[in-house]
Image (cartoon, rainbow, N blue to C red):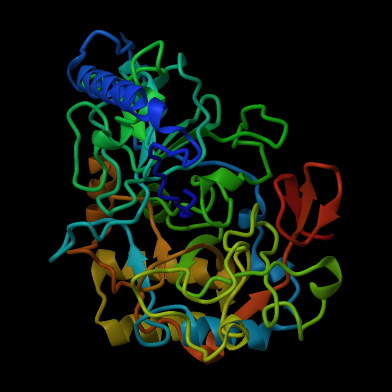
Length: 466
């Protein structure tokens, strides 16, 4: 989900031009209004009658877990692509500056619990929408404002057994394989689930006061979220992700829907991950945004100005002009914004590894991997060589690859069956070296207005040139 947040505050204003005779009556009115507002807020907290929830009968699901299908640019192998003319520059930036740790120590994020894993889970868990057993309203938080695709009187299919990622972002994704529809939730709480960072108190605000003051909110009935959106095409129609080849800006930093690029235990168990992955890095590019004439100038793009490239749906940091976007970690290295920007990578950029089967086996030996874990690690390494990964989001710490999140207990069971122990964040350490990295030229976005571009836009379709 989008990470840009705004703290909103309001308070009574004073009119210095008011005459003295009006001040005492005005004070009385303000006190009365304040008393009413306190009473209204109290009603919001205790009122149990305004929530609207409807039981829903779950439908049969597929044996073996949820399978994701699609035909996006993520499914195109790198053997069909062209090396980017600035490959050496982009790989340098990725290798040297992508993480707050040592170069190339990129973690594997699956949300598996390990030592000190509390609030360190940023892997999106995925749930089969057909297991929903209730329909609930959704109300929006004011402290994490994001995109909302749910009307006040609309309800969404839900199941209170679904748990969001355990980090401070509280991600949750649902997918219905019979319709191809994805729903994305950010910083979500709901009846029976209240966490320190994902709490319904954020939905007790002026927008959600009881009617006629607001749309209403029942803490024991309604979902509370920073973002709740169904993936759509640019024209607003729900996207069938089994056939949709476009992107979706509200889904995250780079604007790519969450089911695309997700690595699942089902496909690893089947022996092959035939698509590119998603990677979160610390040094995503920031603004100001390049003008069209600057985008093809290597002395401008990524130096004096920034942007994102296809298949990205948006330029996440367009409003930022220095490398201090992520806090509280140190800023991107560089004495000036130009030096900082020269160490960044645009969201949407695709990378892969150049290595042989023999080199993969040598790496497996160096890690001491045996049995099921060795087979799993080999499958993942081959995928990173044959399909690579896209930079799609910003991390506030170590860079990493997103596997399907283990807050879904079925997903955790699947990863454990594949030999992963503890958090397994170090699963791929040692596989990456500077000389093995290669950058690939971006595909082409077909933007909402019908134009085609290798730069960010909300695209109805995306494809590599033939």
